[in-house]
Image 1 (spheres, one colour):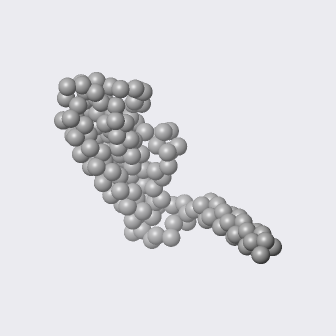
Image 2 (cartoon, rainbow, N blue to C red):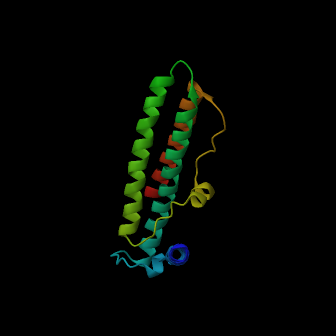
Image 3 (cartoon, helix red, strand yellow):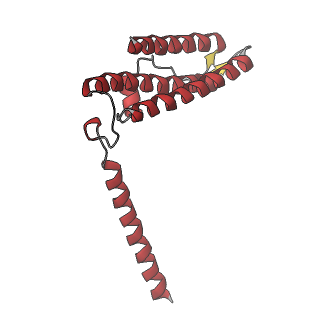
Length: 158
């Protein structure tokens, strides 16, 4: 019985290793806009312009949801509850819009990039400090984040 257990264990380890290498290989296989499996009615130039605008919007919306959620956890003060609840709504809306933007990019044959490294590198939003934050400051931080996001969205539309 002990030998059977060792054999089963070795088989399981081999299977895990195969799964890991297959998964890793699958992760590294990606399509670029040039090799997209999605056919677009846009010209290459239109696809590039629209794709860049959607990508910038995606990055800012992802960061908006992250910034807003961070200050949501950090808020303290007499207006805690009302600010906290309002921030939940902003986060929910930002996440909904994020998904819509990413799906529009995909629909035109552009692969959206919402990876954390991309968001950290390309976002137009200011970084948020560490620690607890007074409710008044949270409102200012959130307003600034919304303003930066809206300005870049409008710029991308033009």
